[in-house]
Amino acid sequence: MSNLSEHLSKAELETENERALSDALFKLNRLIRDLKIFSSLTVAGTMFHLTVGAWAIFLLFKNPTAVVPRPYDPVQFSILMEIIMLVIVFGFSFIFDRLTASGEALYQEISDELEWQIKATEDTVEPNKVSTKERPGLAIRLTMREYVLATRLAFVPGPYGVRYYLVINLFIFILYFSFIIYSR
Image (cartoon, rainbow, N blue to C red; front, side, top):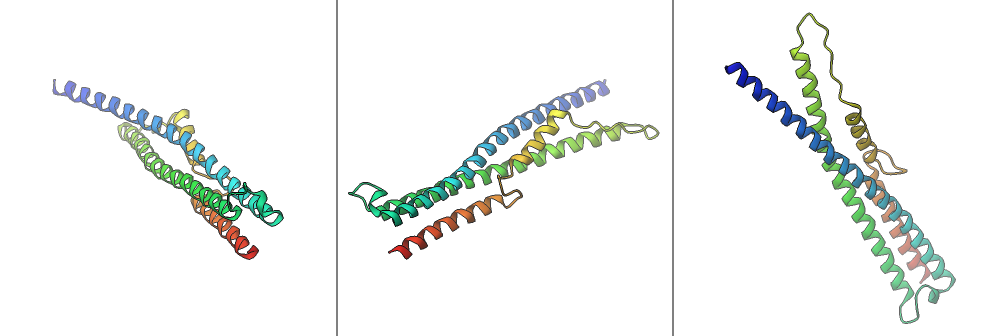
């Protein structure tokens, strides 16, 4: 009788582990979606920041009053636009970085759980039999691979992509201010 209750608890435990793994994969899929969104926003924001800076510099050199309507100072307006763009891109980059960190923890936990499941399968195989490692299903493997790809920013692959985008945006900002100071 004690064997039966022991067997039921193992079955319940396996069901709970499967449910937890399913929930973790669902969360990872949501993180993948969010990472793709903020990756695109970071790249687009950087390109827009570069465009706004180039546009403002061009118009300031061509005709300082053409940038904004007369009551406003065109230099102050363009400086405000540059600051806003810098803050927006920094915000997108920060959110992307936080999502990546959350996803990394989830990814590691899913990997550990799958590894433990494979080891448990190996432990139950008799010593004279060949182990049939149960590899994770295709959906699980694709989700995990998609997460790894979603953590990369466009044009700058690798773990330091966010830092490169921040440096690029700071460089645009500093370059813009050097043009403003030079033009005065």
